[in-house]
Amino acid sequence: MERLGIDLIAAARPNFMKVAPLFHALHVQPWCKLRLVHTGQHYDRNMSEAFFRDLKLPSPDLHLGVGSGSHAEQTANVMLAYEQACVADRPDLVVVVGDVNSTLACALVGSKLRITVAHLEAGLRSRDRDMPEEINRLVTDTVADVLWTPSPDGDENLLAEGVAPDKITRVGNIMIDSYELMRGAIEASVERKRLGLLGREYGVVTLHRPSNVDESAPLAALVRQLKAVAVRLPLVFPVHPRTRKNLEAFGLWPELAEASGVTLIEPLGYVDFMNLVCGARLTITDSGGVQEETTYLGIPCLTLRTTTERPITVTEGTNRLVAVYALARTVEEILAGCWTHGRKPALWDGHTAARVAADIRRRLLGESDETEPAETAVRQAVGSA
Ligand code: UD1
Ligand code: UDP
Image 1 (cartoon, rainbow, N blue to C red):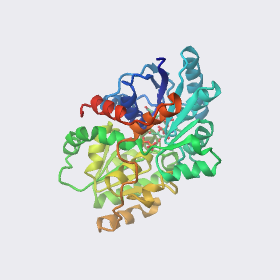
Image 2 (cartoon, protein in one colour):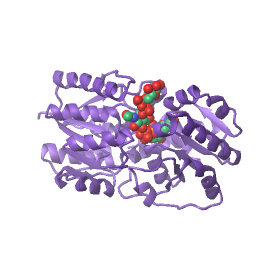
Image 3 (spheres, rainbow, N blue to C red):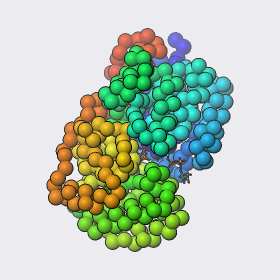
Image 4 (tube, rainbow, N blue to C red):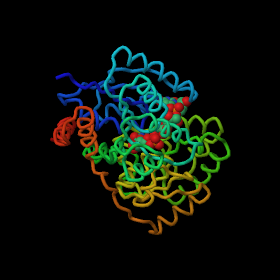
């Protein structure tokens, strides 16, 4: 039997958690031949390699090494390099995940070469085109042949945009698969202990959206609010490289680093970061993934944005959009016990990779829906079979 050639594209921090469960579900299947492609959008050890180690991913089969740049540079460089890779060794299916520049670039390359393109995490919309990710999502979903959605709003957005219903399969949230795969390691991590947080209440902060961190005045306002919060609740803040660069450039780093109750640390690997989140009283974030993980864990999440492409985390989960000026006041509400408990959305259950594998077989090989072989492969790969 000719095996189906599948390229799995990984590029930036949030991609690795989306790719890993699918890699583990697929790489031992006799019907497919996987190529793990890293575009190199993120390259620091603690933004890339650490995740390969934590998520038990092998070194990529192909590393495109594009690095940082303007949106056009980065997107174009990925396109140039990935086109060459596809011409040299043409896959049958390109799987892109999430909404980063590399997602868009590889979807465009696959589509122009008339290779089937599938998008995992399709249909999410913030309706805010000031976010580069919204443009990436719109274009990727327009050119993709297969759209795997995490929640009903994803299906509704795609249908409203005129996407044919038979292109869409709701598979659930792949981020939760990573959490469930790594749950043992997350619980065993000593990160909370290392930071002296055992038995203490604390909050976890992550920030990297250009709207929050790229200009001096909004970032200074944020720093003031974080300092005010930290007086009441100690805050641990693993600082994203974009944010660190800007805090330093605007002269805000010393003020935040020296503030009482604030601990600034390097970005953490997935297992240690989730160990920190699991024990937190609340999170303060602008991350997409953290909004989802806290909903799954039932931890209050304050999202410093005016929109979210993940509305189910607000309607069903523990997330709330908060203006920067209202941050300290909202934290007080949580400490006073005022917050919704939320529930886990449907299909956020750790079995999304198996559903994706079954959908690939159905669509590309004409075989029936069978999730069990992929489930077993995943359990074996992470040693929990
Ligand atoms: C990117 C994604 C964003 C995602 C985020 C996850 C786009 C448009 N943005 O944003 O959707 O939420 O990743 O973290 O694709 N840098 C380093 N080391 C690295 C990577 C980046 O120092 O390993 C610094 C560089 O100065 C770089 C800057 O961070 O210029 C921004 O990196 P980039 O990948 O362009 O965007 P992110 O802000 O990381
Ligand atoms: N994360 C991590 N270490 C950190 C901060 C975040 O492992 O120091 C994880 C987090 O648990 C989530 C993912 O990174 O799984 C989210 O990535 P990010 O916030 O960079 O991107 P976004 O989700 O906003 O696109």
